Image 1 (cartoon, rainbow, N blue to C red):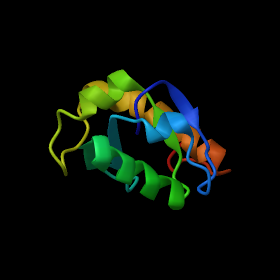
Image 2 (cartoon, rainbow, N blue to C red):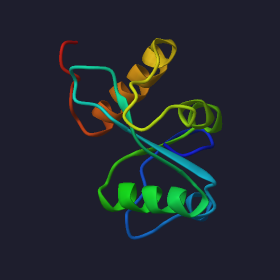
Image 3 (tube, helix red, strand yellow):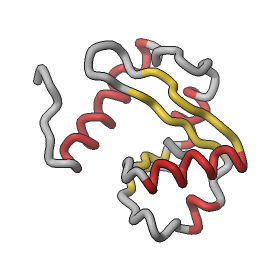
Image 4 (cartoon, rainbow, N blue to C red):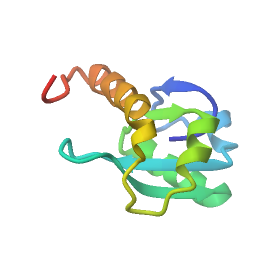
Amino acid sequence: MKNTGGMKRERSDEIPKRLLNAKQAIALSYDGKKAPILAAKGDDELAQAIIELALKAQIPIYENAELSQWLSTLELGDEIPQALYITIAEILAFVYRLEGKEPENT
């Protein structure tokens, strides 16, 4: 997740300027069984590396500065807090729809 405000589907061969200027990036991992966990986080150059890896892997990027700041307070491997379950669930459901999938247990 990057910081600014909405879901973006970018081509991996074109990195938009707004993503090149990202100051913070967060990556979540979700196995469909437990709460999503913080898989990566970084600022400045590390944020750029996280974003570039996501784009190359065709992982959708969600831009929201407040959510990114909140998640950055977690440690790597931490589950997201219950207070964010609905927000993250809505993002994951949107990603599933983008990919033409249906979330399990709907």
